[in-house]
Image (spheres, rainbow, N blue to C red):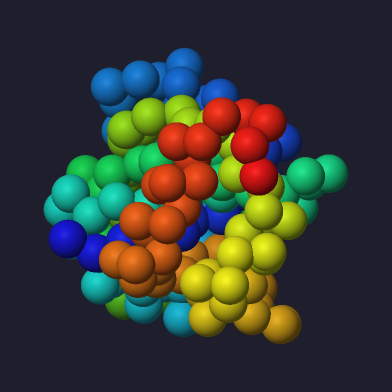
Length: 157
């Protein structure tokens, strides 16, 4: 199993949207960065990802999702009226892909500030200066540490 971190802006699509669709799958669409797209192509069924709220007052990890469908063409690239339209993409030669995910669990929120103060997470991709990717790999060691942080009481450091 591989681990990932997938960012979404909560005012566009947040953890609450997945909680409301518990048991259902959702396409992770609209990714328009080649490296993030390539990471989705590497994902395997049952891989896990942290659901991360970004571009909000307090960014951080809000839950865990599971990959339920391998990378397939993102249909939003073909919708000329949509925000994610790509005129260079064709159905024969799609440029953009997405995976499907389902909620595993909504977790205790782990803010970005708490991740930053963990020395063992210093190499985590999301914490690197200038990183803006919406999807990044997470090592097994990073995953385990963050899972321990989630298990702590809300007031614990």
